[in-house]
Length: 326
Image 1 (spheres, one colour):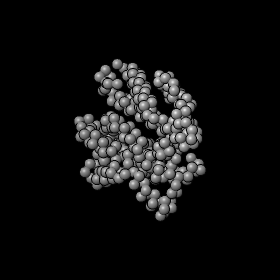
Image 2: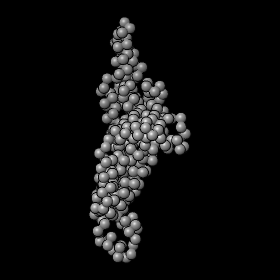
Image 3: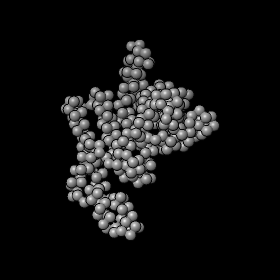
Image 4: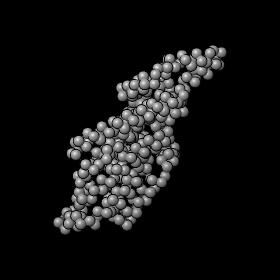
């Protein structure tokens, strides 16, 4: 099996996975009681009306009286054509609400991801090259500190220091600031630093441990004997094999932090992004908006795992595609 066929099959399998997840989501929604129907029955009872008639009217209005397979096909069509319904909490289509939130989430997620992907492996390899020195101990201490401290707690501490006491950054995120401006970079600096600190620790440790196995390898001794500079030797002969096992954990760790920590960071710093939108939708019991956010996170996870597998195959040419599981 060649690379092109493997990539095509892997993309097809990702599409099948997303289809299975969407089907399971529909099954859970169909089995759960619809809150708008219950609300209509309660409202009718309070106003002296007939709750049963209100329930039937609400079911007809929302298409719940249709056969299950008709609702399933409508649900699939809506998901894949991005018609994800109306958000009662935001009073706008769900896709527009998610697009507005993504705009603010991307402003700190893109620099956070770039810094983590660049700095994590580099510092890990540097730590391995200076193993058991004060530089290695300093990097190890930083990694454990970032891995151990909760992001929301660290964010509150930094917000108190730089926002309340020193007044260097605004306490609440200001949406009126231009996106590409120094003021926006200043108010996003602390959230990005908090997320980088939380995500870089595990990547640094994996990079350090993996690269430590190659620093005394035969090919490194050969490179040094041929007069290859240490920087070139580590860049070509240590960094690349280190990235292979790292690629299997990098996307998963970033997605876990993106789904969990970004919500807490957005709540702490008042950023109107995806995490805060999902949290407010849960509090307001906005089913369509919660479903839309869930589908968005699901698709991000599927695409992230697809990119992870593709990166794994590109980085290690020794891999036989015939032995790979899709």
